[in-house]
Image (cartoon, rainbow, N blue to C red):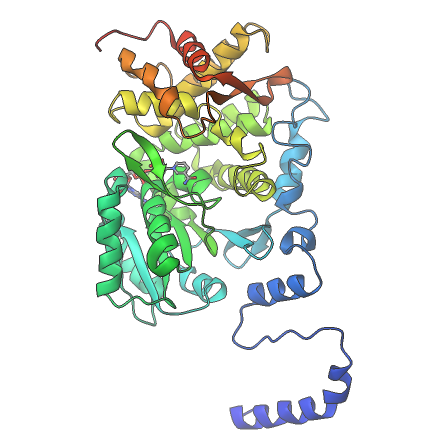
Length: 464
Ligand SMILES: NC(=O)c1ccc[n+]([C@@H]2O[C@H](COP(=O)([O-])OP(=O)(O)OC[C@H]3O[C@@H](n4cnc5c(N)ncnc54)[C@H](O)[C@@H]3O)[C@@H](O)[C@H]2O)c1
């Protein structure tokens, strides 16, 4: 059938049916829209709060009783009513799509799909961008090292159409205000306008830096995240937090700006785990499993002794972590309802350790250290039975994240004073409560500092 014949048949039909259509309760214009965008329009019109209500058993339902409520049988206990089922329910929030799995993070009109692609390299990315972005005028902000490794694969996935790369310095180096300024200027010089979009490709640092730049460029342009490290796939890519570091501390300047979609190229992440070890990502995975109440025995099976996540379990691990984070973010997008803060488990201490070590301790290792500190403090306060801390330590050891790599200087004490979660004179600490569930407790800043230090002894060294 020729295009002309088709168009004429369709306009005939339209005329014939116009009378009926005018009686419809709602009309959705589907022209030049992806199925996802059409679904969003329908959801908006029927008054549903976006796909959160449409996909009733989607991620929003995962930890319906609040994060950490799963696993009532106690940490590490695998019970019939235990987390096994919760995992199944959570995974059910994702469905099969062409070449992978996809779930929707329900945030009303800011809802977006998270796709875990099993295709080679970045295949499928172009189609995904067509679905979620309103424009084909795209600029790819990409970690320079990732560009070096994958330029051809990225180019192939993004063609046809112009492929414009703007390399970002590799890793944490991208996360400063001066680098942000450079990046904004390069976008401007490359011709990006208010109707352009950014595709951010790289680890957590590149996504944080590019997401921040997109959120302020000409007062914000859309961004899609393409995480290439395990850490970014299980954590940094989801939830819309971005930012850069100040001299005094990590992530001290930034915004919460949701991407239009997240595309996880699983084969690329698999290679990253193979070549870089994926320890930082494993630590965040461990954290999120503890928050979700995953049984310790089950968490252990995700990694080989020494910490490398098993390739055969990678897809499951990424989906599990992503779904859990999506559930939490969907209930507390702006981190002001007291739910999202549980994701901070281990992080107050981790940020102290990273800053005090001048970033010689990597984020993931610092997080694992922070998990043990939180467990020790919780035991010290009588919130969980003695022995819990040893089990967390043992789990971190299995993941190759324990013992900690170095002693830290006493300046660490300044950490809580600079923590951005501080409100007035108090700081919320995420600790382990009954049955190992994460609980948030506020302490005076000094007391919080002392508690955290008590949890890290005997590793504090004056003048280290
Ligand atoms: N926004 C959030 O919610 C959030 C959450 C957790 C962590 N983070 C941030 O994430 C950052 C850490 O991210 P990260 O651990 O992904 O590291 P990273 O982005 O700093 O990258 C580390 C190194 O890995 C390289 N790399 C990236 N992808 C690769 C690949 N596929 N193959 C080989 N090398 C690759 C990079 O070039 C870099 O040298 C921190 O700055 C942290 O604050 C943000």
